[in-house]
Image 1: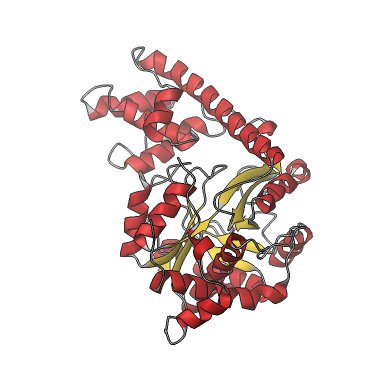
Image 2 (image 1 turned 135 degrees about the vertical axis):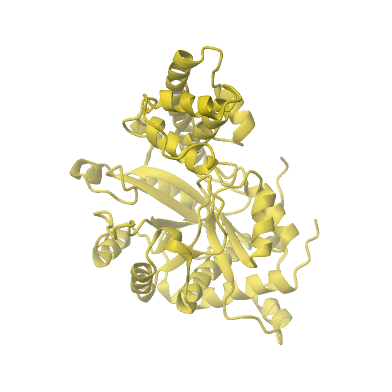
Length: 418
């Protein structure tokens, strides 16, 4: 695909922006979703058009692409945002490893794997570009992730052969049918669910096929809910203890410092994704004390966090967000859409509880800072991040105001030339 010119490169400078927007009133905040996965990794959305249609219907003004390891979706995301008048944020997500925490059994933001850390980069340059060393590192971790996936497919085929020798899963077919770039566990679960439907016309036999792969364990879901069934397949077969589980090699993970370097070199803002409380109200060891978490993140040079409020209790999340907001952190919210379930794009807390006005304002400010950063970077300036990966808190209010101006100009005045 040909490189697309970043729409921000032709935006007016700050003074002209202010002049253009003079006399135009706009709301104090709008709906923003800074974290969705797309079909370029794994997504509830089969096609990006579905995400844009939903965003328009829900009046989402700002939307952030946040795929694992890849930026292959940036061009299509940029184009779709232009057509639908949605301001795009260009993000990325990694899975890394903190070896000392792993040795100590400390869970970070993965509730099941000590030492494993999910980590995002916000507001990367578009078009995406990094140095040759970072390109090599990205290529390596993508390759290693696919080695694991292929090994899982081999194990699944051994199980399938015992039940139905004529059936088989193929990496090439799964990639062609379900994935754009990387094949992930969820693609395997979807492919296996659909393979079960070909066993016979009998739903009882289709479900029996899967239950036999489970080692005789009865399904709690059944065939009526495909998304939930795919989650069950992952849990029973592909996760630790499952018959097709393959442990990831350490080569599949980058050290956090290398991840941060890739993000900064790509023009982005290092951002820690917060897991926070589970349904029982418990947090991981790394996140259990907000003050300790704050100090740990500051020590790592990280002053940006994101939350997926749909998995958190509203009161716990609000107290946590206000703590970090008072510390001057950039805070963004998202919905992920990294599972088969199709949920709304409007951010809510656990149980679909609406966010209050103060939380929406905080999330909007975070989106504005990232928008301002992208605007400055597109103009050849440093943006929020300084060359050493740090920033100045004193910039925050100016960046919020600039970002809101940039977004509102885009929504009310900018005409796409494509």
